[in-house]
Length: 139
Image: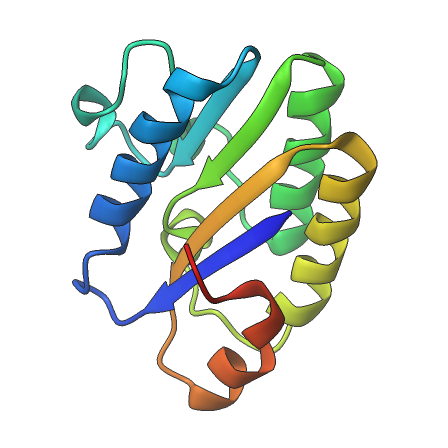
């Protein structure tokens, strides 16, 4: 399952992502990975959540993020849930139409590996938000 949380910057997406991750870690046997650009919110996450700070890896495209996900899970088969907080911040770029292909790849990855993926990003384009409707909804 892939869930996407879109909204304007400052609308509370990270707060919701942190709360969801902290809630979910208590109900899984495997690992939960929380990816964000910097360690800014690490102290707010449960101690059993594995934090990955992407500024250390120079991810600069959706393809590099996808490859990183594949590498992360191929090295650890216990990963059950992945949170990617602030995809636009990780990439240092606005979310554009390329996101559609990326979300479909991540969805296939999720199904194939039985890993739930939660992604947040700031997006202003109503066209992009509407086009990603199948990944948004109840978070």
